Image (tube, helix red, strand yellow):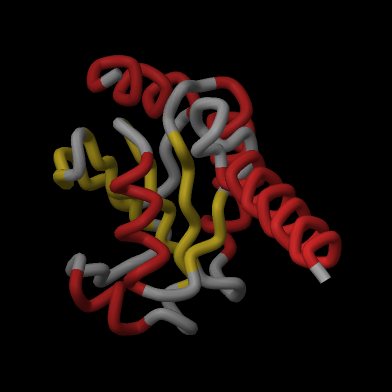
Length: 134
């Protein structure tokens, strides 16, 4: 019986390590955008990372689709974590942060919202903004 328990403990430990590596907490920021499903998910992402760029978007939004490759590149190329919030599925979060139009980008630094941008932004402008707070 103790062998089974040891195997269970090892499995649990490995699962936790996989979760950490997937969300970036074990090795810097995530290299892909994190899809936020609840206010708790966003809080956790902001708490785990020094700088977080949050993309509030909608699937039906043309400009949001135009911005998506830029957001993905920033996740891979910068030290900031990038989170994506679907405003249709997360209306509470959209209301909490005053989203009136999409795409809206919100930059968090040290757990606090510091910059709010509405509309499509250039990769260079966003990277410069991230660098200013990193």
